[in-house]
Image 1 (cartoon, helix red, strand yellow):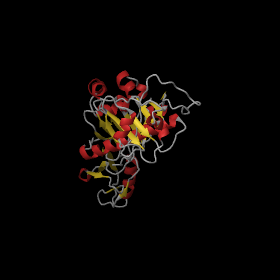
Image 2 (image 1 turned 30 degrees about the horizontal axis):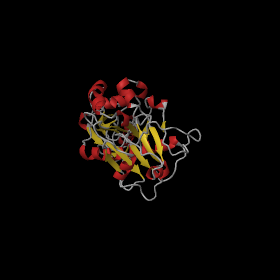
Image 3 (image 1 turned 60 degrees about the vertical axis):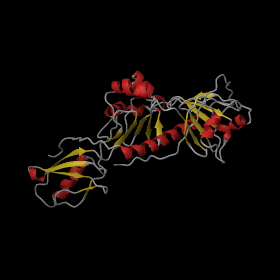
Length: 352
């Protein structure tokens, strides 16, 4: 299996202050005043994400192939692509098929076989995908690590992990899942999929095509936590207690680290696809020159190492840190506690 490179620390920052004035120093810049102001960041999906991939499936370690010499049933065998990318069939030495399509692999095996036998024509089909997977974790009926034998949309993947999309929406997702914090992570970055629009409103413009090693996570709506990370002594989730303030949440992470920049502490709230970001001068709060901020369950509190000039960049940093942290934690649990689901995926004989 091509391992998913997922690792990171936790991140988050959020909170809302009713009745606060918004004063800015310019488009996209942080307000000069200490009073927090909520800014909604809207990230649009790239239209290319809605197009099926055109690249053919290529072989990798863990894939299984059925081979048979034409007219010789006794030659039938199932082989597995090894970690070195090679397969071993009949009297042949190891044949490197890493990165080849099934047709290309068949042609290479036939070429090698022709050196030893007259009848070198073979049929070859893909029996089992073991090299390309998608991670489906969280509030699903059957979470796990699933093979990707071909193009697969997000809804198709969710259906595979828990029944039909309508059943998932009616039973699991709407009632028990936190769609605001659900995400798809690809190569360490979140894709701005709006799960609320997709699963509650049927907005197919959010039904992206997945790629191998994509990480899909739907958290539970039953958890009552605030996520505190960044430059704090102990980045962690802090159990929510009503009321909870910014000061108490950071205290729950054992306070800011010595190198923390407290002028731009951030609170991120709402959907990860359209997060609300509130910047707070934490020093002013501690000195009593700015009001403390009430938090809500699911808020992400982020304490930076240095100031950030542009709110959009800052918000994306926080969201991506949050996503990578959850992916690392939940991915570890999936590997330790979930059996990989294997599906035989014949592509049909490709012999002559």
